[in-house]
Image (cartoon, rainbow, N blue to C red; front, side, top):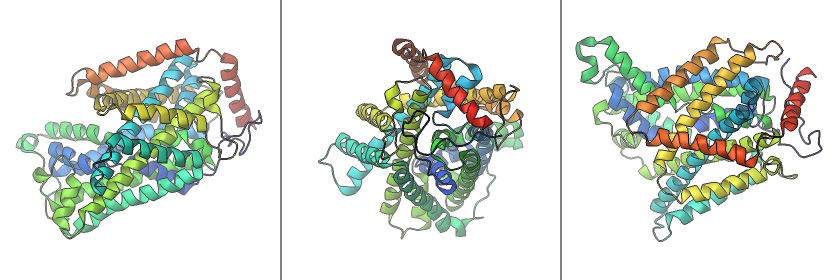
Length: 466
């Protein structure tokens, strides 16, 4: 029997709980919006530089690779639809509070760097679009962060409405690229590789290039972590969230492949710029189309990414607090708005500081390594839980080979990222963050309340038996 949804309004301790109001449609768009970021506008050009017109193959391979971990997350959420799910399932599988703490805060760090980066991107775009050069970028960034925080504090319903609007707009921008380009389909071959790869038809060289392209595009599909952490606010989460993860990944794949085919059909792959390739495609295919509209679409796409990461981060802190891994204050829920307001405001203070740092590219690359590590840990955790005879299955179960392969893929990507160009800066920062998180664990005394942690797990087990 699967884990039933938790109480809708108040917990066993009488404290208000999160608002369980998110529908299947909303959580699917939430995941799709997390995947369809503004990065695709430049990613197609970068991938085409590696793969030629066969860039669409990279999205197919990377979706298959990402789907392994996505299915593992779907399995996890069907058993334990909880905020802070990655930290919770890590604790349940390994029973090591320090590891659970590091996993949870590693995911939070990835969200924080993303929010800070997106706030500056939005600020710079708005400044240029509206001619606000007299206003410093940091002021506009702060204004953007305050607006997003206001939406989040207002409620999960309002946050999801905003997410739906943003996702529809960013998807419409990509569908526009497809619409103005479809008449060009077939103009160029779709299996033309760069000369150095296709020389003498060497299949080995081509396979290596496809894998390199898949590594580049893999991160276009990692929205399942965001979806896991909002599961406690979803209706029939153990059924709807796994289904939403699959639907979002399939939807993103279809759009990405169509966009890739459109790009190399309108322009020869060698002509696609590394940055804003899709903007150039639209200019070539529809010169009559106002380019300012794509700029507006980009702002909504970037804003949506920030919103999704903030929701994820606040729910993760909330969930970790409920597990006894973070201060109890972070687990407080507003009695009227039913949002984790303390966690939301805590993240606001942190991202404001991070947004002032300017270029945090190295930090962002480091958190990507942390995120891959988390995926590996969660995949292995699912293997452990599946082999444990007293663990109750969920409504959605995958064969044990799926998380095993997912762990292998994510582990391989860690190795690839470590040896990519860029030196030792990002890995050094990643190891430094892990060390800092470990120090925080011991300094703050997180995880010492083992009774609270075990009580939380026992309540989950009791609910599963009900």
